[in-house]
Image (tube, rainbow over all chains, first blue to last red; front, side, top):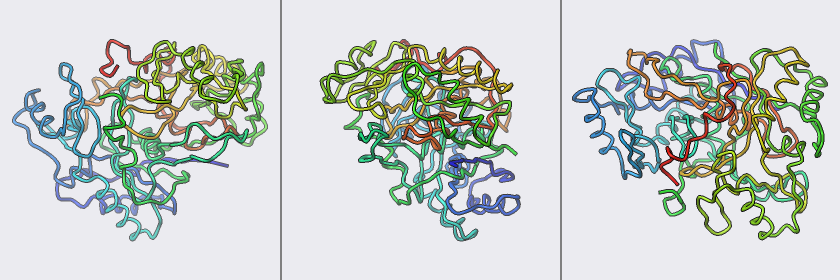
Length: 235
Length: 235
């Protein structure tokens, strides 16, 4: 029977700039009761990755001006602006609020930026944990994004290692033998969303294991999930 | 320990117009080995709900013209159009491709439309199963939507019964005592995405149980997830 389980990795503790995030996650796994198994997907909130990589900025103050300045700096282009809300494209190609600049769980007058290369960050964690625990796994670095036409936010993948982020069902047929219309499933984003249901928005459990998803090995990183500007009908 | 499990309900069988979808799901659960428990969320793909409710249309043929005509009929307004792709707002307020008209798993020269009132459909299933199995549960009716800036599709909630679709964390603080910036989590959409990871795109397992999510009882239906047009920066 198809069954998925998702559980948080507890005991990772606070991550500070310069720390080895793969070691911290690995130590928490080793100290816990649940082992990694082949086929697991590890979802890691980008915040601990960014912190470990020193992507933390001290702001002059906690006011909107300091924040806005940083957002402009992080944005490759601003897509829309309304009052305090800025929808921007990041240098990675992600379209999101505030160009990924986040002041929650950062500390007073500090902000956390997105990792420079989230795919590389994900892959480093993947290689280290695969070696340490002798398992085949995929790693997803996540962030929380809004959507154009739906309220509320969901977690999505911003870095992917080891797996294809999209499963392309083109050519597969439905139960009547007709080709499926829904052909590209954003598996990595659905995994990020499932992980968020146990991770939540505190920094206490910044990683979770998603077990039981069938995924396709690949080394494309997150790029298949990014819609090229030329294909985008909404900017 | 926070843990989520998701499993498909097997043995629902083909649903035809006029059938009782709550009875079909209930019979499959009763015949299976896993019982519902208090707090479960049942995710049901809209296709079996639509079929049971007779929201199936025979097309003149399987060509693009018949399909396009039907899409125009189902759309409250067309937001963007490029070649064969139509992004439309449905009468429910959802913005999605083809106004929710889907030809997969419908049969030759047939299309499945969205339920007229997916919240009502979800609530009917919820009441029937709650009574039959004497459990407190929430029900989500799902569909597969694209996103403006990301490739690939994910399942989202189009009908919600028994739970708040968004968890509003406003006023909650992070681990440094600062107010959280991400305040509105689209829990129902994350549950729909998690369910899709076990459901897949065949019609064989059109429903799944998501167990271990903490949700807030509510009777708002899906509407908190729909961004009002006046708030929408992208149409």
